[in-house]
Amino acid sequence: MTLFTPVLRRPRGRYALVTSLLAAVALVGAPSLPARGGVPAAAPSPALAQAINRTREAAQAVLDQSGTEHCLRGKLTNALLGLSASCAGAASPLCELADRVVVTTGWSVTFMETTARQLLALAAPTAGPHTQP
Image (cartoon, rainbow, N blue to C red; front, side, top):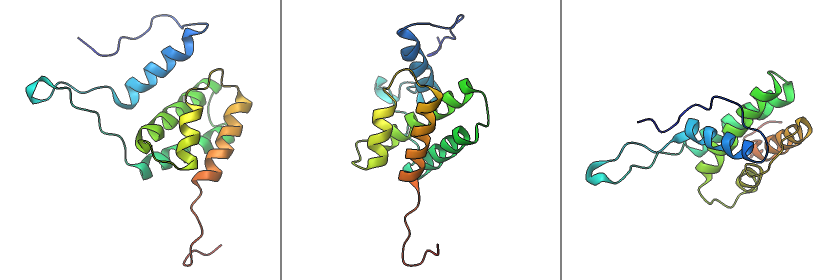
């Protein structure tokens, strides 16, 4: 038995986002097979730094328009789901934005571009004493 069965037709209406998010969750980290004792093992979240890098790459791809709208929406959604999972309740503006955006419905190109700019601004490395401008 598989955990994810492909959808034969594209969902429409209010269930489209839910179906898309479930598919993205399946790609990001579906539950593992049961561990010893019959208790399911949790899928490990990617390291926060790795999730931030994926999010930066997806945001830049949106701004560069390097793909179809559908592809970019999926790339950004997957990156944000991974980031949200990696944050695990961290109280940073970047994590709060990721948590807020992943539950938003009806992503337009404008929304994705605005979100990408916000993500890049929040994920930018901070200038320290040893960093040159």
